[in-house]
Amino acid sequence: MAIDEAIFRETIKNKKKPTIRFYGWHPAAVSIGYFQDPQSELNLEQCSNMGVDIVRRLTGGKAVFHNDEITYSVVAGVGEKSFPANILGTYKVISDCLVRGLAYLGIKANLAPAGQATKDLDLGSCCFSIPSRNELLVAGRKICGSAQMRTKGGFLQHGSLLLTFDPVKALSVILPFSTSEHLAKLKNSVAAINEGIANPIETKEICNSLKKGFADVLGAQIVEEPLTPGENMLKNDLIKKYEDLRWNIERKKH
Image 1 (cartoon, one colour):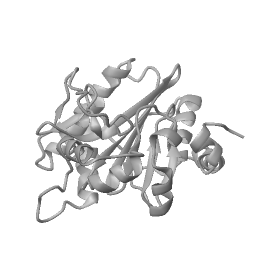
Image 2: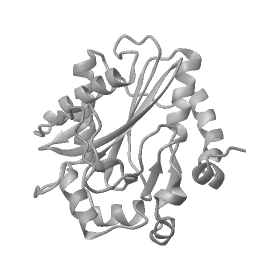
Image 3: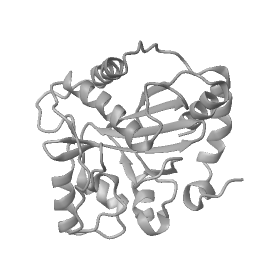
Image 4: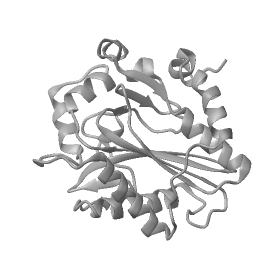
C-alpha cells in the first residue's frame, strides 16, 4: 500500500507517465476500504488468531481477503488520453485491459452490468459478494474486485484477481458472524483463475498475459522499471503510516 501511494503522489507531483504494477501478499492480509470500520465489519480476533494482517487502503470499497491472488494497480495523472476523466469510464478501460489479458489465458470474462446486486442475504463488508458496474465476471461470478480513488491530479485504482479462493477462510476473517447461507452465497458469487483445472497457470504467465492485455487496449508500450529514487524514499516514509494501528483501525495519522 505504501508503494501504491508513493507512486500515486510522485506521478502527480512530477507529471510522470502512468504506472501499472502487479504484486502479491505475504503473509495473507485483509485490506479495508478507506471509510470502513474494521471493529464492526471484520472478525479482528480471528484475523489475529490466523496471523492475517489488516491494512487500510487509500481507496474506498469493501474488505478484501488477499491470499492466493494477483493484485494489480494502475496510477495515472490527470489528462492522460488513455483514461477517461471519470470513475466509471476509467473502470471500463481497465476492465477491458483485464478481459483482453485473461483471454490470452483462455478465460472468457465480461463486464458486469449495472444493477446486478442482490439484497437477499447481507455480505455487506465483503468486496467479492457483489459485482459493481464494469467489474469482471466469469460465467456470472466475480473474479476481480477493484477500487479507485481520484484527486484533481489523477487516480489510483487497484484490484484483486483471484488465483484460488477459499470461501470458508475468507468469511471467517471478513464477517464477524457468518452462517452456512452466507457461505453458500459467497461460493456461488466468486470465481478464480485456477478453479477446477488440473494444472494451475504459473503466476508469471498470468502477469505477462495481463501486461499484453493492457498494451493491446491502451495501444502503448509497457516498459519494466524499478521505483524511482523519489518513489522509494516516499515509500519508506509511508510504511510508518501503514504499520500504525491507529491508521489501520481508526484512520488516524501521526
